Each structure stands twice: as C-alpha cells, then as structure tokens.
Length: 270
Ligand SMILES: [Zn+2]
Ligand SMILES: [Zn+2]
Image 1 (cartoon, rainbow, N blue to C red):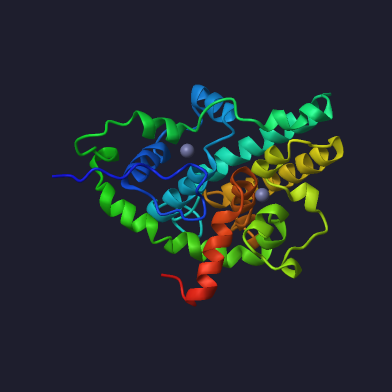
Image 2 (cartoon, helix red, strand yellow):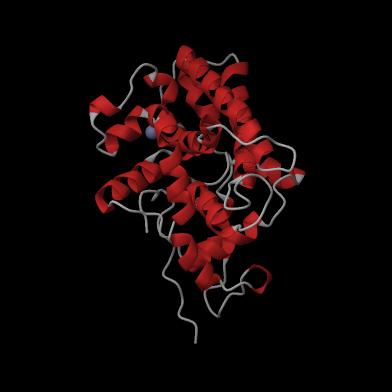
C-alpha cells in the first residue's frame, strides 16, 4: 500500500528544499515537457516562471536527475532551466524598462499574473492511490536521489566566488550573512524580485539598474546554454554561475545561501 505524501510545504519555503515525492513527480514531468510550446511559454511568462520554491526545485530536479547530454558535464546540468529563465529575464527587463509608468506602479509590472504551474498541479493531484511517475519512473527513488543535492551542491560551490557578489542584500541580511561578505557596490540593482515586490516602491532609476543587470545575466546564460549543446565551447565560471543569478533574482537567495552554510558546517557535501 502506498502511503500518501504529506501536503507539500508552503511555496515560499526555499531554505529547506527537501522535496516530496509528489513535487518530484510533477517536476520530473515538467522537465520532460515542452517549455518552448507557445501556450506554455505564454503561461510561464505570465507567472514569471515557477514560484520561488519550485524554481529552485526545478533546477535541483533537472541537475540531479538528468544524467546524460552533450557538453563537458554530459548531464547533471540546468539546460531547460537556463533556457526558460533566460527568456524570463529578458521579459522582466523589457517590462521594467520599456514603459512610462508612475513609480508608484512600477513594482506592479513584476507581479505574477498567473499561478505557479507546479503548485497548480499539486493542488489538482488526486489525493489517493499510487501516482505513476513520468514514463513509469520510480518517483520515490528519484526523490531520494534529488534530495541528496549532490550535483547542485557541487555546482553552487564551484561558482560561489562569482555568485556571492550578486546576492540580493536583503536576502543576505535575512540569511545572516556577515556585512563584510555582502559586497554593497550595487545594492539596489541586485535586489531580488520577491524583495522588490515586498518593498512596493520601486524608483525608476532602480528599475533601470535592475533591468540592465537582468540583461547582463541573460547574456551570460546564452553561452552557458550553448555549452550544454554539441556546438558550444565550455562555459566560463561566470557563465556557469549565471543560472544561479537568474534563479536568485526570481526566487530569492535563501536556498543557495542555506546550502553554502550547511556545507560550511558539515565540511563535506553529502
Ligand atoms: Zn510552486
Ligand atoms: Zn532578496
């Protein structure tokens, strides 16, 4: 008999990313879906991608579970994640910079106009019976594998020197990062989308800076995506870090900061 999963954690919970089997089942199916499909793309733009928890979870599931592919790593890489979030970065930058709107309304262009697709699927999922995984996959085994975070942790660690200065200052403060490790040269331009929305007031010059930074990140994602194909050169460390920057902006930085902190405490990745 299958034991029903507990209900999924609140979508805002990105610090503790231990995924339920139902979340992994839905995300694994999403990874196999066609994010280039026009209707899917329209919905994902309207929702600005997935909610914070499922944005990071999407990357974890693709990185941990996708075991083959071209490029230097030959799998365990955020290929679909990078394609989707490059598109969303460009979309958000356009929204932030193209319109003449009152500053009081500027933050509203970042508000999601549709629900997270994974949250929707989770709330619609049948509560009884043993759900079948994508193409008959063993979701319990996949969940255990995903939750080890082996490849994600390694990736975050290898690129930390690059992404650390990109961390949203509000996220860093909330995570207890010492002030001397928060590089403050461009604080306003680094503020993540959740914290821009929370602040409500978004001055035009800040919106312009944020928009410019989003395009810089998108420009780094291009060669990263190419590096995961047959034709691309290997990515630089800065390009390797760009998907972390993209998700950090859309979903906040609690997850990578928590992984790093737990690493420091544990000494070795598990
Ligand atoms: Zn969600
Ligand atoms: Zn933040």
